[in-house]
Length: 299
Length: 299
Image (cartoon, chains in turn blue, purple):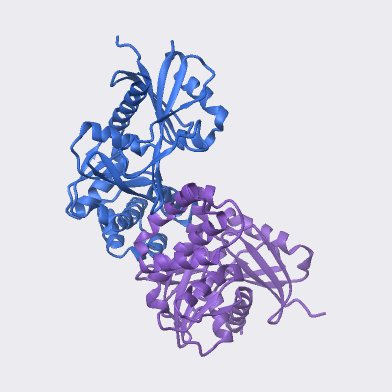
């Protein structure tokens, strides 16, 4: 059996995912809902130890990325300003009591104007560039806070964040639309129509959103159509705003299939053939790059 | 002392407000947070009786408007389709056990294409038209679900709903923006700048929203500026979408000062001098009109 060299950790606001690594190869994976959003500073080490359980034997370096490096996280890891290579901010060591743990957290990337920040995505981009070293184009990372980043000569040149995923969740759960979204399923034509609507007329969003409720009340719009329509309206508006990024460029979408596929579909509707790449593979490759930085610094 | 003739009730999703009325004059007012959203059908009568307390003596007619007439309300009161006078749907009597209560609920207004509905606002519009019988122009009713209605010859010709208020609340409470909005105050220049931003470039909304968070992290944007900016971005986008309604028209904004004032300010920034009218006065005048309909039907 391969030996455990290090532990890769992706620690976001609402999730914790970790992998036991041998070189660049994952040996095992674990996850929990103990995101940094629910923890105070003293809570990170016990949470990580609990998630590791008996898999932590001797001293093992941990390389982490994501909101765990925010001001409210385990240790604040700084931002590097664009243009920069994705991991330009380096890593910050977090304080630990257990002698078996040495924890390094990757810093984020910021943009001064227009003001923007990323934490975690820089590591995915680092992984993507490690696998695609000559890539020149646009990386799209859909999620709660979707990012569009322009990549050139191995650097992040500029980027922009859209609250699409978080708006989708807030609208689904905390507005009158929840009554119309109660059910499963997906309706591809409704999605395509909605993308086209807000991409060409983004100002229609606020009325189109309530239109979902009205269509459900007056015309029995079903939950599958309603959900696809809501997703399409939000992604269409994002594509309208991100047009300077994707128009006429090579686009790589990094994300799990559920999150990335609608973006690839929506871009396809605009005649753009985006490549879709796996989220976890990029995180692990990026954390391996970050680990190499720690090792280099030590020697 | 004047005698109690009837009880006026404005019963929305999240609130219950009632007035003891002598003719068109309110004698007293009461309110509670027992909105229809938290009640099942059997809960309405006990809730109303509790709110009335000892003020209910002999048999008294109750005239109600709002979501209490929805499918999930006390009794479903139908919709009239535009173009129509505001109270064209008439009133629906709700079932009651207490012999002192006779409850009539005003029906709403619907639009088949684009699909849209209102419940409660038709009564405010009826009140506004009772006070301004020759009005020809646009009525704006800001709120959780803001309405813009075109009025001509005493009828609602068309209308459109925007989820602005509910989006503001969901973004404030249930997204990362809550960290940047924790505090009081208002910053008028931030509001004006944000209105102008999304009014001219509505597609910028999704990125501008996250920009509030990024500005707070990188440039110490304060909560007063952040709140005014969030409000301005949403109202600017609403004004962009509602432009066919207000451009070059007479506009009356009906609402409480806290809700209506930002709309009047935003329209003023576009060179439009909107009149602002009091919400409660319109509700009461509209419910008095609805009461007259019930009386007419009886004779």
